[in-house]
Length: 310
Image (cartoon, rainbow, N blue to C red):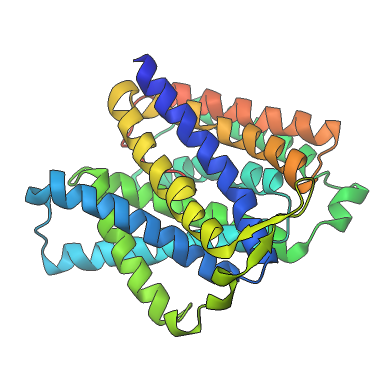
């Protein structure tokens, strides 16, 4: 059981570190769309390979199931990853994650509207508390809020909406298939469609791969673009997905979701130490309120199908 907690904790650390890596790549000339391409490739190469090796019996699909997986991959993986990348390019990572953490409450609302799944009163109490905390994080009505990027906030909210869809749809798909199959094949559809339409592979800024990209902030210096792209796709995306799924198998999805919330705390710390992004004491307090409300929600909702992180 300790190994499970260690795996999920490490996945949270790697997910958190990938945010600043994405920001550095975007600042270095790789648009958010092509950052998404790298992350999707990481998911496909690791998880689809895992699925082919270990879950070959689950790789038979009807036409309807393939269409459903394709929609899930393009909307729930590619578009969500893109809106997240666009958001952190404009707004501090900590704020983006706090907004994204409102997703569980939207999922609860979706469940009630779509399937009439009644929620415990504590769910709605937690939602109100989280909204109050979010207002503190965003400094609503204060000078900090006035200076925030409106486009960045819009992308953050849209990311939350897409993550809500992603989690809700994943819950349905994961009743029939292992997560490696759902995410691996969904990621394959996503990367193919994404690379042919929104981020054409032939327009990829390949020049970035062969030159140093400034790390910026307090670190200074630079690393080859190819190193950052590969690190973001593997160490920052594929490996933490694998660790998260392996950890869930040992400690369950509810405990895993709670442990994964370390991502927000670590992301803020890394962004402060590396990118010099800062939050006021009031915003930090609001963030703790949001995290606390989501922890309470996860505890009272009990066991659910696993869904992967941003």
